[in-house]
Image 1 (tube, rainbow, N blue to C red):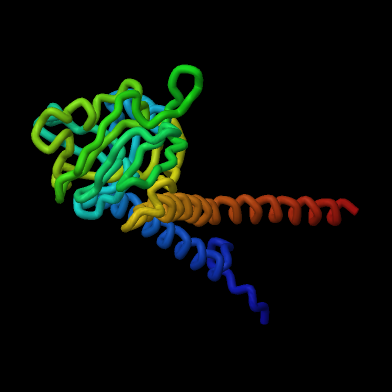
Image 2: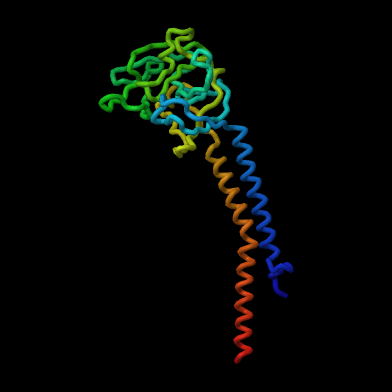
Length: 255
């Protein structure tokens, strides 16, 4: 007795079962990835060129919803603050509460608590030289606040612009609504980790689950397509094989 048990439609029962399982698992991964992503992430459009070259104006970004208390130095965050216009803005965290942030040392670096910070993501200035700020400053960041800078230090309106206001240009951690993880359009992928801040107390943030989310969505789509294609592909193969068999039988009959 043959071990290849077939249904009345000619498809192997095992193949049909695996096809259905692939579609079911694919749907779970695909839809689950989207739901999970919608809960964790919020899409934004970059409103200005102050974060170039890291983020171009109009770029579509994915920002993970986080509590302001989770933010660390070097993070690129989305925040709203009444003194800054009360609209979503995107800047990089240069210092946190308790830090003394200053600029610049003899090499043009930003310093945090006296330690120079390497910032390779900054936009070069005239002559191609990278400096952390065209104007000098020194600020003691109040506890619970953040000092924020754009990556284009030559045009960005950031904490330096608000230094005459309460808090010397800093904003409360509670103003942060999300942390940017990736640029989806134009496609740049995950942001580079701000390694220059890694040696400071507290280190830097770990990237959010963008990569596993995209992997789940992509794998789900492939499984759905593969499972859905099983029936038509097997049917076409069976039809061709049957046509070939009938043609052979006719040829034998002629001879």
